[in-house]
Length: 86
Image 1 (cartoon, rainbow, N blue to C red):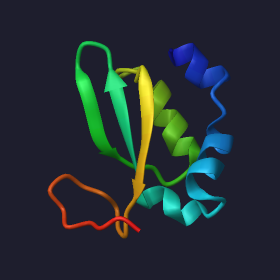
Image 2 (image 1 turned 45 degrees about the vertical axis):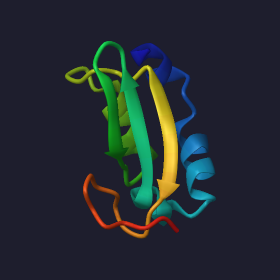
Image 3 (image 1 turned 180 degrees about the vertical axis):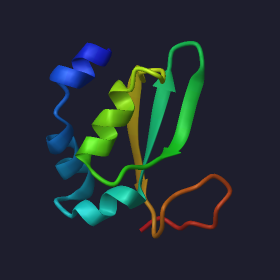
């Protein structure tokens, strides 16, 4: 998966789609990562396509098998917060 994310995954296109061409929304868009044998990590956010790519191909962390796009919140989503969806 790391090779796919590093060379083929269209990060800029995905970020454009997730933010409706308003990059400021990316920090408020909740993503979740599913890992093999580990489970799901929720409340993942990024500031830009480069930070998203760096996280997904980081050799010191597990590469996600699946990425799910969640809601756009009125602030950065965090577990146990009082965020409301926009």
